[in-house]
Amino acid sequence: MLDIKFIRENQDVVAKAIKDKGTNPEALAEVLSLDDTRRRLIIETEALRSRRNEIADKFKKGKDDALVAESKQLKDKLSKLELELKEVEDRWLEAMYEIPNIPWEDVPVGAGETENKVVAEWGKPKKFAFKSKDHLALGEALDVIDMKRASKVAGSRFGYWKGGMAALEFALVQFVLRILTSEETLKKIADSVEKGYSAKSFIPVIPPVMIKPDMYRKTARLSEEDKNERYYLQQDDIYLIGSAEHTLVSMHADEVLDIKQLPLRYLGFSTCFRREAGSYGKDVKGMLRLHQFDKLEMESFTTAADSFKEHQFLIAVEEYILQALEIPYQKFLKCTADIGNPNARGVDLNSWLPGQGEYRETHTADMMTDYQARRLNIKVRKPDGTTELVHTNDATAVAMSRIPIAVMENYQQKDGSIAVPKVLQEFTGFKDIKK
RNA sequence: GGAGACGUGGCCGAGUGGCUUAAGGCAGUGGAUUGCUAAUCCACGGGCGUCUAAAAAGCGCCGCACAGGUUCGAAUCCUGUCGUCUCCGCCA
Image 1 (tube, rainbow, N blue to C red):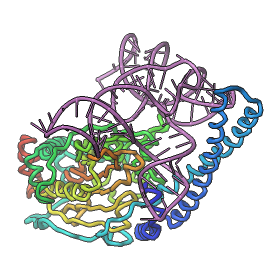
Image 2 (cartoon, rainbow, N blue to C red):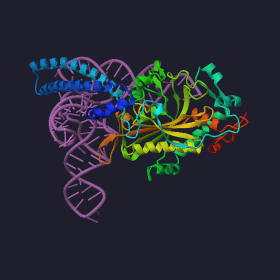
Image 3 (cartoon, rainbow, N blue to C red):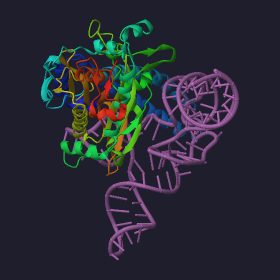
Image 4 (cartoon, helix red, strand yellow):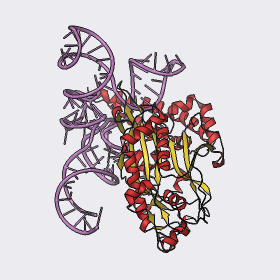
C-alpha cells in the first residue's frame, strides 16, 4: 500500500504507474473521492466525540439532566456516523490495495513478459555430442521421477522425486545454506555490489506454510487475482502459502526493529503451494510447473537508504549460486506490467534448460520498498529516535523443481546418467545418478 | 478437544467506572550542567485529523490483543473472537 498523502500530492506519478502497470485505471479517482468523504466524516465524528468528552468531564462535579439528554442524543448521531465512516474506510482500503507501487526509475515500460529486457548473460548453452533428452525422459528412465503414480495418488501437476534426485534436493539445501551463512563468501558478493556493503549472514528459518487471511492480505500477496492461485482451507479459515516470503515478511508485523538489527536477512525453507489455475495447457509435461514444490527463499528488511543495494545484493547471491552450479542463464530487468503490483523493481534469472530448448524462469528478485511494510506496520527506530517504515526485499535462492530439472538436463551424459555438479558432490556423497 | 490463568507504550510494569493528560522504571533522542567519561536535571516519544506551500508548534480525536455491547462517561463491567501460558486428553 502507498501513503495516502503521497497519492494526494503526486497524482500524476500514481496515474503513470497505473497506466504503465496496466492495473485498474478507476482506482485512483476512487481512492481520492473516498478519501475526501472519509476525511469529512472524520471531522464530523471528532466534533461529536469532543462534545461528548466535554460533557462527561462536567459530570465530575455533579449530574445534570439536560446534559444527560444531550449526551444521549450525541450517542445516536455518533453511532450512525461511525458506521458510515467504517463503511467508507473499508471501501477506501480496498481501493488503496489496487493502487500499485511506483516503478523504480530504470524499470522499462512494457505491456508483458516479452518486453522484459535482457541485461546480462552468463555461460553458453551446452552442445551435446549425443541426442539430449528432457528431464522427464531422463527421470523416468533412471526411476528418479514418477509422475504417473503421483497423478494416481494426487492428480495432475504432482510428482515424486525419488532416489538420487531426492538426495540432490537435500544437497542443494545444504549447499545454499553454507553459502548464505558464510560471511566470508557473502563479503565477496556484497563487495561486488558496493565495497564494504554489509555481508551479514542470513538466518535460516523454517516458517509456517499456512497463513491467516488478514495477515496474507497485509503482505499484498492476496489480491482478488491472487486468490485464484492460493489454496484455502475453509474449515480452518487459513491459506497455504505460495512462497516462504509470505510468512517471512509478515514475521515482524507490528514491530519496531532496532536499526542495529538491519539488514535483517532470512533464508526460509518451505514447501510452496500453487493452484496454477490460470495455466491450463501450459507446461503440462514434466515437473516444471507443479502444485507443490520446495523453495529456499531470501527475505531482507533494510532501511530505505539501503533497499536498492540490498535488492542488488540478493540478485548477486542468485547469480553466485547459478554460476557455482555452472548453469547458463540470462538476467532480465522486468518491465512495468510484469513486476507485479507491490513491486518497485523486479529481476528474473532464466536458466538454460536443454530439454526445453529455452531459458526458463528459475529465480526472481522483488524490490518492494515500503509497500508491504506500510500495511504490515513494520518500522525501524533510527539513531535520532524517530521511526520509519522498513523496506523489504525478497528473492529466490533455489526453487526446487526447476533447479533440479536444470541440473538433470544440463548434466545429462551419453548413457542417460546424470553427473552431480562438483559443488554438490560433498553433500550427495556420489558423483553420478545412474540406473 | 477439556479446565484454568492472562493479554497495558520499544521493553518491564501499576492501574477494579470520572482525581489517568495510561503512574513509575529501563532503553532511546534532543537540550542544560560539568576538564573528559560518568552522574544529575529538563523535554520528547504511537496513529489519524486540523492548521501549513511543506514542516514544526498548537488544538482535537483515537489508541490498554481484536470486534461488539452496557453507561452521561470504559484500560476498568458484559459478550464474542484471536493469541500466550499452565494442567489434562490426543499425537509425529
